[in-house]
Image (cartoon, rainbow, N blue to C red; front, side):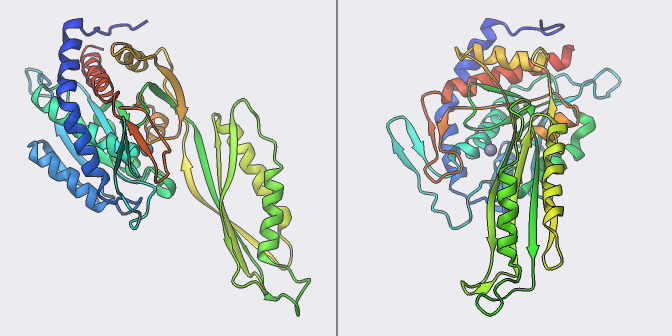
Length: 394
Ligand SMILES: [Zn+2]
């Protein structure tokens, strides 16, 4: 199935597994150190500076932070130059997002229990960033045959709209042959397809008034609720899987006032971009139908994540499978919405892989399991080594 793809020798895999094992305890310490630095989406500055310091301490090339707080570094390939001195091969990108869903006031206290470490953002994605730094340390010492770009990017969560990775891709597009995206808690999974996401901020405005004196006049909240009720009646296909969620609703001022303003945030997703477009059309038609003389609605697109896929039989996906199998894990193929969407939509072969298992993502009692950390890191080393060879010999 894997054409022109050199398979790593068992001896090399054993070496990589042993290396991962010796680096696992430090990776966990690093994950906790990163987790202790608040990094809400759009405010990743402090965490970005920390990662840049770690890159500099390893003496990596081209260490920079851009204006979106993406942190870049490069490890030159071991034999990447032809006799005439030109770059022979394109590079591998390894990325992990730094931002979290938690605001700056959230307590970041860590708690250990049995084989678990609990803490907001520990798995999503402090561990991913720690694995990025650990891989940087290892492959700086034992370089791939090709250039390796390391990026700790911003703006993956919430309304960040993948702004960090979009800027990364813009900067590095013509240098890259493939990408691996790290998500701390996704161990055992190979994300090879990104689902399409659209997010709308729907605002409703009316003139307002007094609840008794002006009863009967339109209220922005009543209008928005009617619209919301209609949206929740929309039937979406099970296949291609298509979903919607009104995740935030706001508005009004006091209990005895007709609301003059109300708004909702609507998240819509689909495996198929046509199905998503149909859903959005239905929503827009409902909004249109609600418009009458005294209430006005406006729609702002606040999220747009493109869809993309790299087929299961693609060498990169198969190497990710091989890497998991070589640490005794059973790979599960997944579709999801991560930074990889941007890269996949642009046609760059990309997989998202994890480092361990965990739970309660996006909650303050988020946790990671520690026993799999070593296998998770070994899988990453094996995957990166294999992809390096594949890019070089493909
Ligand atoms: Zn994440």
